[in-house]
Image 1 (tube, rainbow, N blue to C red):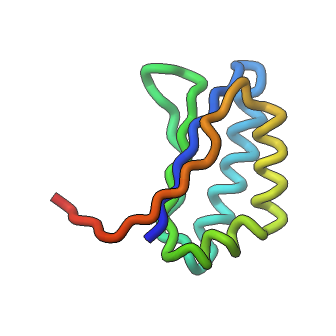
Image 2 (spheres, rainbow, N blue to C red):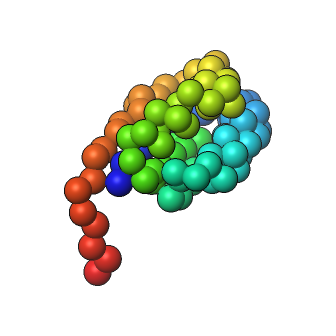
Image 3 (cartoon, rainbow, N blue to C red):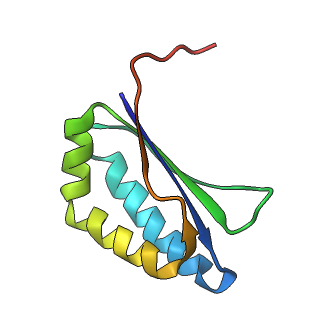
Length: 99
């Protein structure tokens, strides 16, 4: 499984546009066959700080996702709206246990 995370800080004046673009992205991502889960979460301790958390079947599914027009378009929009970004972190997970 592949875990992808990324943190984006957005100014209040860009919040609505960021949420609209991100919601579209998450909705489209969730219907891709290799997507296990995809979400956007706001840090309650730091309003305007959003974290994407995505789980994908494998790296082939991630590469297919990154090649989608909507995925590239969303990245461009987020770069315009963000005050800062951690970048995308890709984690290759060998196993997972639920406790």
